[in-house]
Image: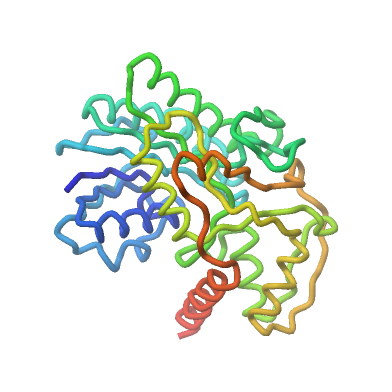
Length: 315
């Protein structure tokens, strides 16, 4: 049995990781301040004797009394809606928060995993994106607060690895979807599903020709487990290489929900990535990992989750 501290543990991805480690018999400390996380995400296992919740902002000094085996840093706004509304907290959690989490891991002699993102590649000039690609990021654009915060977090993580010999991992996470995403998250999956179920027009930006690649949450959780068990310290892409345009995705959501919603087009946001497709050669080789959940299967589970949430909101 190991003890894990997960920052952002009440968020979409963090809560699934908490649940997964608990099911494997481990102890979990979930740290969150509910800036974008939610109590209902952890409600089903909050009374587990091996689970402890800490209401704390990781951008402030972190103090934990127990020994720790792993520190997983998942705290951060991750949706454009959130980090455009919370630009300075986003920069602080990527810089100060990462520094504090790394310092805690060092003090506890714990392994550390950084949840990085495909956004470090910015609006990429190559396709698919491999880990050696340095990216095409606008540091002073509106998305720069998230992109550069994560790029700094990667640099800080590697500095702790090289200077302090800390046992670190970096997961570059591509678009992930599944239950526990917020309806008002602002990302394409919850946006389209919520609009379709409500019978509202689906909002497509630009011509909808920009591409995205979607992985189901269960595949990501398995990838994180395998990365933690590996000896790889440099970044590893964890995502689904199956690529489709946003317009194709909108039509798939309409088909799966049976919605009669129309599609409306709005101007493309500044610096919106035109392509997003992971090269997962490294993950296949080092982790023996690749996505297993078919898009339609994962979307059906996600649609049912949102359908239930909408019913609750009307009750």
